[in-house]
Structures are given as structure tokens and as C-alpha cells.
Length: 447
Ligand SMILES: [Zn+2]
Figure 1 (cartoon, rainbow, N blue to C red):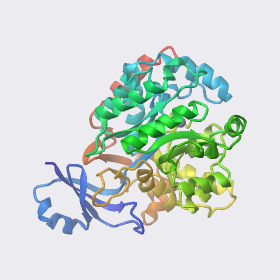
Figure 2 (cartoon, rainbow, N blue to C red):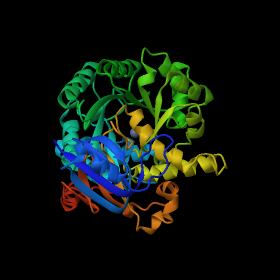
Figure 3 (cartoon, rainbow, N blue to C red):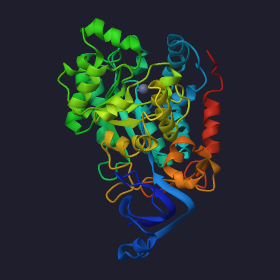
Figure 4 (tube, rainbow, N blue to C red):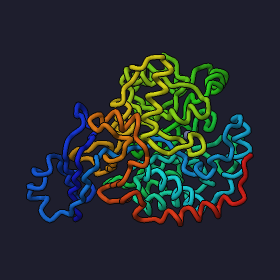
């Protein structure tokens, strides 16, 4: 049994109705938070006697951030196809380099993407995974890389059958179902939730209705949510109208799938009727404002979705369509984009955006994460109160969202384990990751 008490000068727990706290201690056993409170009270708890102590003085402890949408291999393509029209980027960067990547390369990509995320305070990442080569070797290598670093991972295994894409992405329906089930059987962790496998039919353009149905069926059987890209770009709405005579979400609603378990990704072009439908069916959204701006996709009506009660979690999307991998940055981007879109500085506030990157994102992924509260997994980030980007510290919650510098992230704990200490990864050397990235991308050139 591993018992730890972590004590910080301030805390942002992301619990409903709770603002910034002064000196706070978290007592955890085997990665589960048992008690949160005043340090003197927590240390007096008989169960905490003999627990290891971690001292985060001059630091604020905040709930670990949750990245609900990423494609880890895309970090390797960062800068390679930027500022190109979408089809040129796809053909000259994505389709050119990604199909060659094998398991060892995917491990390099994952170490790179997840290592950088940890340094930004991401404690859980959902990797939407479509480079499968009709097998699980790549996904397994990615999960193993996450384990090595100590980050919590949701592997959203893709269901993809559009024949316009490289063969490496495509599977038949029986292949996709069998591979999903094998990967889930091997890795599903229902005790500590360090690895979770969820199905992810790619999109309306990447998966046939039958493939979407198969993915949603696997979700139902596994008791998991399912992910799907929807209405990211305007042309996808037109395509859906042409193919199905319906807008994207209405077309999905005609399938025998459980939309309450659906995590739609993007939804930039959902109209009012689709937003109402998403709310009515209890579906969730993975929202990636940085990526939507980078690619010029459009603006999801986040304010309306939140008002309707839709659960929304923030995501960075891939490292070559953002190009950052920080959920703190997405909190800022979400707020700024909504404010300018509505020309209203009060369209959304920092507290809401902080929750979208922590507590609500955990709810979207259906995991006990994103809050500093008893019963939740102990995922924490320490922020340096001596860093000027957080001053004045009496406005901590606003400053974490609007002015925080990544430099202020000093320590990260995942499931009670210290995975970043004094701005350094604990279990993998960043120099080794750098050497692997240099070697792998040595001959890659901008399109
Ligand atoms: Zn995506």
C-alpha cells in the first residue's frame, strides 16, 4: 500500500461551488484521494500516520488537466505542413509520412507528445488512434509509452473504412471489432483507470454508417463512451446533406446508436437544431478551439452548448494542427475565441473554462478524474506561485486561465505518483526522446 500526503500553499480543486483554497493537503492511498483539507486536520488523520509527505510549498495545487482529443503521432509532423490548404497538407504531409510509421516509431511519437503534455500539466490524454495497420501493435506501443511516462491514457481506437485514405488507416468491420475487443481485453484497467480503451468510429467521411454502428455497438458492450469527429469543417455538413439528406448530427441520430454515450469531436458547424439534439440525447463534446482556429475550421457555439447543459471537455487535437499540446492553453483559447465570436467580453468566464479542462473533461471520458476530491484519482499539477505569470495571486483562478506561463508548471502527479519533479520528467529522459525524434524525422521536409 502506498500512502502519500501532498501539501501546497493554495489549491484549485475544480469541485462545484468551491473557489481557490488556502493551504491544502491531499491524502491518497494507492492513487485514490481519501481526504482533502486543512493540512493540520489531514495530518492528524490516523490513516495518514506513516504516509510519505510531498512538500509543495510556494506552489498551488490544481486538478490535473484532461486532454479529451489528440492524435499523438501528429506531433512528429509539427511544422511540416503548416499554412497549407487542407488537401495539400493531407496529401503532402499526413498521407506521405504517417503510413510508414511502425510500432517503434509510434512509441517515439507517443513519448514525444505525452512527455511534452506532462510538462504542460496534462495528466490524462485521450489519443484518437487511427494508424492501426489492421492490428494492435501501434496502439499497444503507444499505451506502453504512456505507461513508461506515467501519464493516464484513454486509447480511442479508431474504426475506419473510407477507401480514399491510406491502407494503414483502413479495416473491415470484423477486423475493427476484433482488434478493438483484443486491445480492450489486454489493457482495460477498471481499478486505477490508468489505461482505458474506447471505440472511435472516425467520422462520417472516414467510416460508413455500418462502421459507425459497429463502433457504437462495441461501446455499448464494453460499457464505454464512443468518439466521433463531426461537423469540423463546413464542407462536411454539405457532404452529409448530399449523402444522407440530413445534417451531421441528425444523420447520426437515424442510426441505432446510443447518443448519450457519444463524444462528438469539434462540432464547429452544429446548428441550433443539432445543439438542441445533442443536449436532448445527453451526448458530450470534445472541443478543440486552438486546432479549430489553426485550421480555420469555424467556431463551435460553446456558450450555447454549455447553457443547454451539454458536457464539454477541452482537447488540443494533434500536434500539427494547433500546434501546442497544453490544456491550460486551450482554456485560454476557448475563452478568447468565444468572446471575440460574440463580441462580448462576458460571453464565458475563466472559471467555466477551467472546469472544461478538468472536471467536465473527466465526466466526458467517464473517468473519476479532474477534481481534487475524495474518491477521485490523485492527478495533480503544481504551479509556482513565485512565477510572475500568476501574480497577483489573489486572482489565482483567472490567472491560471488567462496569464499562466508553462514555465510555472513545476510538478505533476498522476495516480499518486510523481511523474514530473522540478520541471523534469521522472521516468524517461527528455534527451532520449529528443534523440529518437531527431533520428526518426531526419529526412522529413516541409511539403
Ligand atoms: Zn481529431
